[in-house]
Image (cartoon, rainbow, N blue to C red; front, side):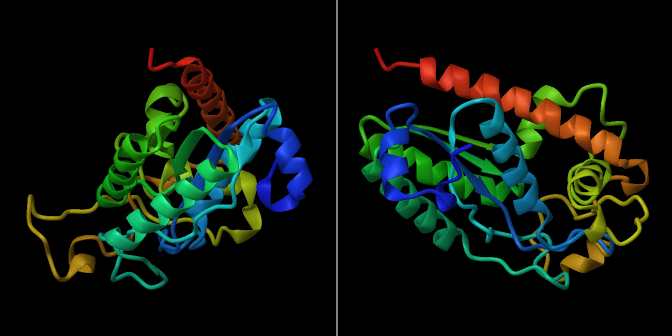
Length: 241
């Protein structure tokens, strides 16, 4: 399992002969209700990447911990960066990975905010036009879930600190879970950019944490890894010819 932060320069040079595919986990430092740790998103994406690399030879880059957090920006514990900063960081990291010899870059985000994801996509649109041999994929853990979690998740429209994320953290790091929380969904007025975001989303939960279990978390991670491997296989077979 080639975790980039754990190897030497010679090991990287040798390993690139086997694979030039790398997963870059992205996340956030963000509130996840009263019961989950602020690092939930980053841990989730990184764990999927690590488990994928245990089953298939791909590289895992050190995660990017900070993201663009808009709806949760006023909740305690959310420490975000601007969209412009996120876009610039992604461009710089991917350019550097490319310079080192990586040609297939998968950006896997544990944070699924729409504006956050848009910045990741926009950065990679620029990069694939700039770097002629680069192949780039951008997806979130929820994108994986839409393809892989059928029959596991009970809650409709569960996306933040609810059934899914609570289950995953109960399985991965149960010691960090502080009880549970009530089910909740945000109630933002359509199309409005509101100043007082907590007025419309007081608890910071989007789903039903009470339906979570560590056993369900294990299944969710396994299904996510299986789907990631399919995406990697398709990416490595894809050509521009």
